[in-house]
Every structure is written in structure tokens, then in C-alpha cells.
Length: 258
Length: 181
Image (cartoon, one colour):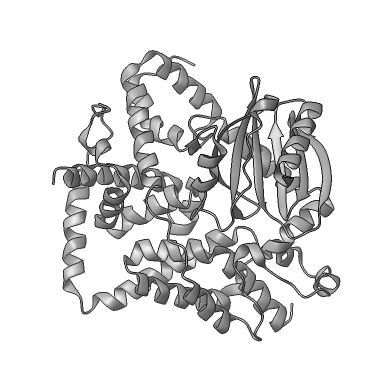
């Protein structure tokens, strides 16, 4: 492929910045950006606009609206709880299992159950995709800090739960920052750690199942470790080897218990 | 699926994406009370259409209905309100003057960048006409992909890209205007 010129690059910059550019053209564009200060500066300006836009308020539905809809949409007074706390009658699972898969998927509280039962390939794929995407450009952290007391409160108002955040720098797993991500049909906290040259993404969100011990898998060359503890589902993904990722997960699990 | 299961299933989907629905409605209507009305109407319509929902992305499906409900609602409201129509016309005029992408002077000290604090961004976004405002909300706040946006606003992929480009240029221009005050 012949080298890209500025005219072509300019057209592709916004698509690249949106993470929507195919790999061959993205690589060609990056080659051009490495040599063209003007286009590189334009990309930075476009990123600045995106960042500015993301600071605009995300309006959450008022509780009164939620309650009104609950009354209108449900046949009987059952709970239309906010995402994290969907409660189901205890015998629900017995008669729910024969229902169409689509029903299972939309019941937010059951997502984790299904994932655990099937080692959900779809969720694993989603997590790996998210991890890979985060490593591109500036998508790694929205809040950059190694201080857990800065990262944890950053999520307030952005999520309907407070993620446990711990720094493990003394064990050579440094907290790099955090960001909002979207997995399993919900907004989740992504905490970023570094160990030597490896970046680890830790996704944590509320889960209603009992504690589950560490489980490991490999996908597309990435190691994943997941567990359930303290009412939270945890997933760690990295190109780090499985043994060290497990060690990291054990440390994190222990830190979260204190 | 019997009626009860259907209603529960829909209610769970609605609950999951209520914030996204309200956020879009709020940015479109620019009013908290109107947003609630639009969401309520949209969800009742969605419940009626639920049998046609074949699974897949529930959020995109609901947002499509919210958006369509907004435009229907807006057409009804517009009958009595000429002021908003004039604002729209002025906004459209600004859009006409936008040119192809040019190399901006990406000076980090640029006024519009310095002006881009949260409050100004909100005001700038609110000042845009509905069409560019909506695509920016879907892209930057809901973080939907081009493909998802294309499905929600029912246009080809290429149109998503060109509308996004114009919307961003418009927002930049609006931020500059606001920073001069």
C-alpha cells in the first residue's frame, strides 16, 4: 500500500478516533501520523472534543419515573428494581430455565448466573474485546491515578454501585487508573493495573450469587481469571501469564476482604 | 411466553435501559418533565411492540422507539410553538456553512478547548439543533457504534459518519461562540 497523504488521512482521522477504522487503514494512518505533526495535532484536537463531550451530564432516570413505569408495566406489584438489585422469587429459576434464552439474557440479575453456568463464551469474548480496545489510543483510563482514594470516588454518580478499588503497588501491581466500560449489558467499572510491562484490566460489578473461587481461561492468547466475592463479580484479563494473573487475583481478593 | 412472563421480561429490559432511554429523551427534549413524558409514552409503545423484538440489542431497540416517540411528540408540540422552530432554522443555517474537514489550527491554547468545561459543553450541546445533538449523544454519551447508530436513526453508515462530522464541527463552533462571552 502506498503511503497515505494528508488529504486521505484527514478523512480517516475521525473514524480512527472513534475506533471504527479497519486494521489495514488504521496501520497506514498511524504510519502517516508518525511523520505528520499537523495531522497528529488534528487527531489530538478531535480527541479533546470527545473528552469534552464525555464530560456532559449523563442524565439518570428519576426514581419517581422508575416507580411510575413499574406500576404501569407490571401486571402485579412486583419489583422493577434498579439494575443492580433485581430480586427474583426463590423458585423462579426452576420454572425460568425452560423459558426462551432471550428472557434469561434480559434479566440483568441472572446474567452472572448464566455466565457462571456456561463459562459464558460470549461474555469472555466481550471482555477480551474490551481489553484490546482499551489498549488502543487513549481508551485505557478516564481517571488516571495510582491513588485508590482518587479512583474510587471518581465512579460516584457514574455507576449505580461503588467498586472496590485497591492499590497493590507494594506487590508490584500498580494501579494505573480507571474508566467506565460496558459489559454484560450494563455499565461497569474497569480498573487498570500494571505489572512490569503488562496491563491488566479488572472489571467488577455487583453479582447476586454466592462466592465462587478463582477460575481461569485463555482466549485469543489472553489470560482471564474470574471469581465472585463480597457480592461482586470480578474479571481480570491480561496478556500476563495465567500463574501471575492468578497471583494478582488472589492479592486483589484478599485486599478486597480487608 | 404467557402474558405475565412477557410483562416481567419486558419490565426487566425496560429497567435495564431506563437510564439510557431517559438520558436520550432528556437531551432531545431539553426538559426533565418532557423527557419523562416521552419515556413513558415510548415504553408503553415498546411494550405493545415487544412481540416483534427478536432478542439482540435491547438498548438499541428501546432507544429507537424513544427517538421515534420524541419526533412524533415534537411534531405534535410544534403546532403551537413557533419560537422553537425559528431556533431550529437558525441552527440549520449554521450547518449549511460548514465545509469539508480542514486542518484546524490545533493550538492547545485554542479558545474553544479552554472553554470546554462541563457547563459550557452542556450549554453548547443544548444549543445545537436536535439532529446533530442527538448523534453526539448517541456516539459520545451512549458510546454506540456507527452501525448501532445507523440502525437507531435509520440511515446508511456513510450518513452516520457525515452527520457526526458536521455535528462535531457545529459543537466546536458553538463552544467558540460561548467562549467569547
